[in-house]
Image (cartoon, rainbow, N blue to C red; front, side):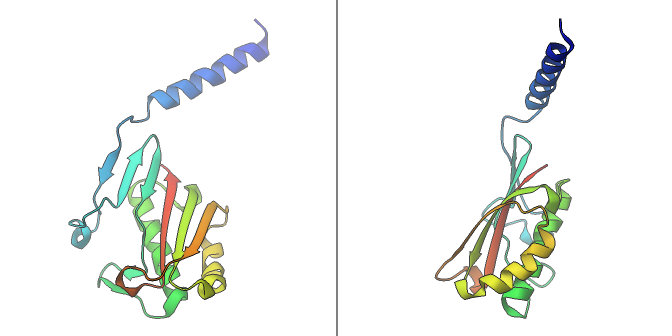
Length: 148
């Protein structure tokens, strides 16, 4: 058998093995933060090596309140919250493959982007849109999908 065929078979076996080791059933994780454990949704759903995070607002999780400073401060805090959740589940911002961003006001797009590009250097796929209003009168909400 040619070396190239052996290599392709080896790669195929590695791929099959990695797929076989992934959980077929989703795992629904509650928050790792005590005061958020009773939320009516999962903070993270894990399946097939992916982490689907629920949207994060610019909340200071120690006080439960939005940070002051508008979209710039809220974007920083939302990303820090995402970073914390990912770290708890053995992942990181550089493993994010998709972001969905919801702005309360599309006119905040440039200010949001200034903060966003500091953290998402690898440029994951992204969808950004504006909504009429967000929960807790937030300026922004960000959800991500990441590789574990």
